[in-house]
Length: 288
Image (cartoon, rainbow, N blue to C red):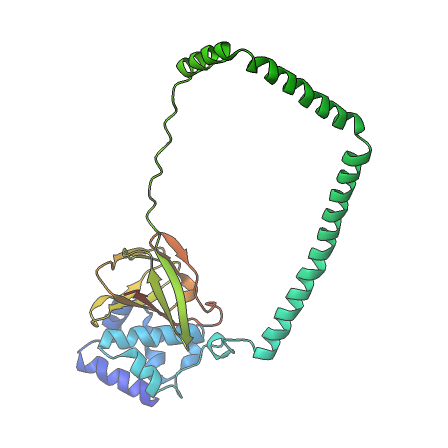
């Protein structure tokens, strides 16, 4: 039995819970709970489930799972995807950026050349191959000029036509433009490890929708440390939280790969792909 297994078993017995009762509380099979106490993690379905089961076990017996994960990191199986590098090397990103720019320029130059060639052909056709059209336009302008001169000799007729036109055409009211309310805007400030901070501007409402496609622990706190939610969202469940009154909100998402977020009805994209970082914390600060 490992040190962590001994600690968990002692806490369970202090609370007077049997493995059957713990199974009911955590929805984890008794044989998996016994394997955790014995430190036999090979029995569990995988490293992700091992960490998830240990977290649920800690919560059921009143232990802070984050503290336990830090103190017993040498015993707890590490998720394979969490150990991968979160970001590409800077040199690789720079080469990728340069290659993308060069590829874009290579595609853009032929398009520009084709556009210039088409404009040149149209100008040549209009200038040199359509002289009749130009002459017709000029003759039309001459006829219009003669008609205007003739009408100028009849001021009385022009006044009458003008008055009739004013009577027939009612004045059109210009539509009044409605002021549009600015939609809230999230601006990313920084990412440090699993914590990413955003600033919310151009709005005050803050409504968060969380939908889980699998079991997912979620914690929500405001700037005062008040907890608005600290539990597990079940598979297929959606939770909605109106956090408008808070100045700062921290979303602690334990399983980002099965948890989707909407902020004020708009889908939210995780700053780090869930495939690279499962446990993420999103901090939203309202602009002062």
